[in-house]
Image (cartoon, rainbow, N blue to C red; front, side):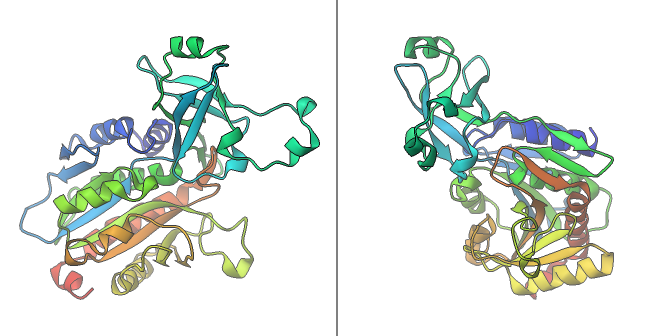
Length: 353
C-alpha cells in the first residue's frame, strides 16, 4: 500500500484506548515482509526488523495506537446511551457529532444528541456541556430495542469521520491523527531503514493506552531495554490559536521537537543532536516548550535507570476532536528525521546523551 493508503487505513481504524486491535492488524500487514512480531496482553505490538544483528545498541521507535473515544456507561429507558470519555475531549465540540459503537456483530452508528433550539429554554441555551446531560442516540425507542441492536454496557465508541487526502494542496483530513500519523511515520521509517548501513538495532513499539495515562508504554518498558528512544507523536498545532511569537507547532513548519511539556523534559543532549542532524539533512524543525500536554516520553525517560528520549511531533490542527487537519510535508519531515537519526546514532553517541 502507498503512504496515503496506509494513513487512511490507520485513521479509519477503530481503536479507543484498550481496544486497539484493528490498528495492530494494519501494522502487521505493512511490516510482514521485513519483520516479525510479538504482542502482549495490553495490545502493545513489538516489531522486530530482519535487518537487526542482535549485538548493537537498541533504539526504540514508539508511537501509540489508541485514540480518544468513549465508553457506554448505561442504557436509559428511552434507549439512549449514557457514556463517559476515554481520554481528553473538549465537550463543547461533541453535540450533533456522529459516532460508531461496538457490538459483537460490528460497529453501528449513533449521534451525540443535540436538542433542537425550538425546545430549548434560555437556561438550557446557556448551560455548560457536560457528560451528565449528553447522550448517544442509535435510533432506538427503548432500552430493550437498544439491546436488540447489540449495544452493551462497556462498549467502546469512536468518532464516525471520513478520511480525505487533498493531494493538490497536500492536506490530510480525518480522525485520530493523534497518534495514527505517528504510527504511520514509525512504520514507514522502519521500512525505509531496510538496506541502510546502521550502527544500531531497531525495535518498533506500537504502544497502547497512551491517552489514559501512558499505560501501554509503562508495561512495554519492562520488556524492552532500549539505549535510546524516539517517540513519534501527533501534536496539537497552535498556529490558529496563538499569537505569532508563541507559535511553536505550525502546519507546514516541519518536525516539532519538544524541549518539555507538563510531564517530561526531553533529553537535552539528544534534542540538540537531533537539531544538528536535522540541519545537516535539510529537515525543517520547530522547537516547542509546552506548559501542558504529555506523551510516552515521560515514562520512557525514567525507565530502566534512565533512557534518552526525544519527541518528534507531526503538527495536527484540532487534535482530540472529530476532524483533524495535517500536512503531507510535515509527515514526511518526521519520517526523514527519524530515519536520519537512526542512521547517525551509534553506541558512543548514545552514551554521550
